Length: 474
Ligand code: 9PG
Image 1 (tube, rainbow, N blue to C red):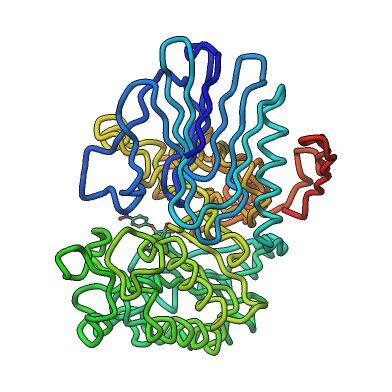
Image 2 (image 1 turned 135 degrees about the vertical axis):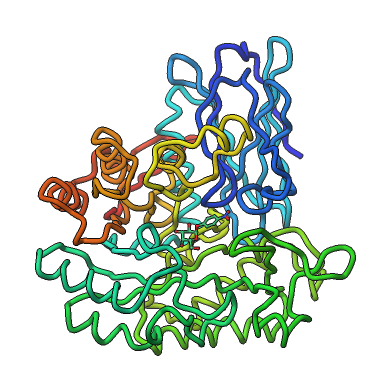
C-alpha cells in the first residue's frame, strides 16, 4: 500500500475528494474538518461505497480514484489512479500532528497510480485526469442537448406528455437534440418490455413520432436492477447478486421498497443485458440513460468469485455497450465514475437537481448530501470539473420554469450557469407549456453551447517528459 508523509501543516491544507459514483458527494474542504458519514444506514448503498465509507474522524478524508491536497499558494499534491478498468483506487488523507499522511489502497489487480507534488494543483489535476482518460480510451462524442421527462413528470410520465412537449419544443424552435423518456414507462423495475398501466402506449411507439419532429429518442433503463415484484426477479432469482447469507442482496430502497441487482459474472445475465440494450436500440432509441449502475458494483457474493466487483461491473457495462452498438450514445447515471471510462459517452457527475435549493434535514442533520437538490447537484458537479476528459459530464437539468418550483430567480440562474461552467450535456425537464418569456429565454441560453471557458490546451512537464493534452469538444 503506497504511503506518503508530507511535512506540511494540516491546518493550512484543503482536500479535494470525490465519492465513487455519480450521486456521491465531491467537495473541497479544510483537511481538519470532518467528512460526513450519512446517519441513515439504509441509504449507504445508494450514494456511497459501503466498502469505503468516510471514517467520521476529524482530519481524515477518503476519496475514490483522485485526491488533491491544496496549500493556500495553489501548490500541493495530486494523486490519481492511471487505470480503473478492473480496479477501484481508494485514497485517504490523514492529519497527524504537524504532518499529513496519505495512503493509497486498491481493490482489484494492482494498477499504476500517479502521485505528484506540484506548485500548481489545478494543472496537474487536469493533466493526471486526462492521462487516466487517455489510458482508458475515453469516448469524446459531441455533447447532447436533452429534454428529459423525470424532473417534471416523475413516474407519472405518459406518451402524450412526451409528444406534447416535443411538439411545443419544435414550435418554439428550441434546439434540443434528444427527447428522453425516463422512469415510469415500464410495468416494473426489470420488466422493461411491458408498459406501465398509466403510460398510455408502449415505449416502442415513441421514437418514430419524435423523429418526425426532428428529435432523437432517448430511453431510461436501470438495467442492473430488479424489484422483488418483477417477473425478472420471480423467474430468475438465481441471477441476483447475493449477500453472505446466500439471499438476494438489497442494493437500495426506492420505488416503495427494497430492490436487488443482477450478478454480472453470470453469462446468462450478460446475455440478458445485451438483449435488453439491443431491444431498446431496435425500438428506435440510440440514446440510453443507464441508471442505478452502481448496483452491479457493490460488494457481494458472485457466481464467479474470481471476478472482483470492479471487473464484474465493467463486464455488465460492456454487455450493454455490445447490445446497444458502438454508435449508440450511452449516459451513465448512479454509476461508478472512473470504472465507466471508455464505455459510456457521458456521465452524470452529481446528485439530482430538484426544484428546491437545499434540504437541510437530510444534508446537514443526517449528513447526507447525495439527495436531490439544486445545491447538492451544483456543489458536486462543480467539484468534479476535471473529469471532463473521462466522458461528457452531465451536471443534470436546468430548471427554468417559475411555476411548480421553489427556486428563486438567482437560484435558477445559478443552476443554469453551472451547466455552462461544467460543460458537457445541457438538459431540461421543464414542461414547455409552463415556460413564460423569461423561462424560454433562460432555457435558450442553457442550450447554447458556449466556447470552453478554460484553456483548451494544457502543456505540462511531468517527470521530465513533456506531456501535451488537447481538450476535445465539450
Ligand atoms: C428515475 C430517476 C431519474 C434521475 C436519476 C435517478 O437514492 N435514491 O433513492 C434515488 C432515487 C432516484 C434517483 C436517485 C437516487 O434519481 O438520477 O435522473 O432518472 O433515477 O427513477
